[in-house]
Image (cartoon, rainbow, N blue to C red; front, top):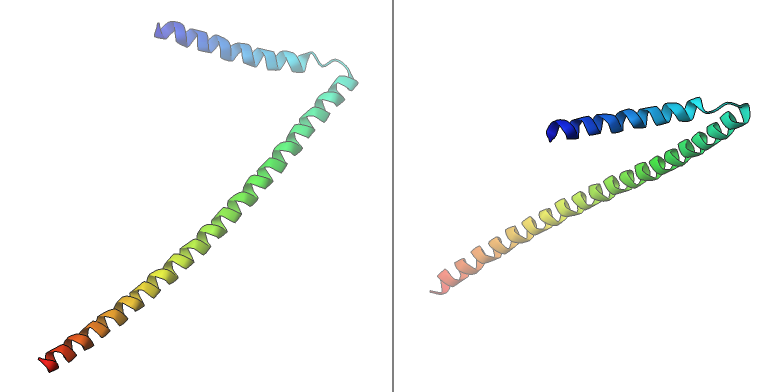
Amino acid sequence: SAQIADLQQKLLDADNGDRAKQRWDSIATILEAKCALKYLLGELVSSKVQESKLQSSLEQGKATCSDMQKMLMEERNHVAELETEFQNQLVVKEQQHQEKV
């Protein structure tokens, strides 16, 4: 079964390669070549536009992530300051309570 599946896959791959070659071999005139090139260039432009959009989106995502990391660090620092202030107030209150007792 594995050998049969492997042979089938090899036949499919060879068939796909032959089809592409046949397509190129079937171009016989300048007009057909021009149409093929026009199509390929259109596909190239389309893929470049898509790549540019994805690159822009990636850069925007990175910038957003960086901003979020900065905000997180600022909030952590703020929480640490509040904890320190709270601990200081707690020490003062404990001292005041000890003085009363």
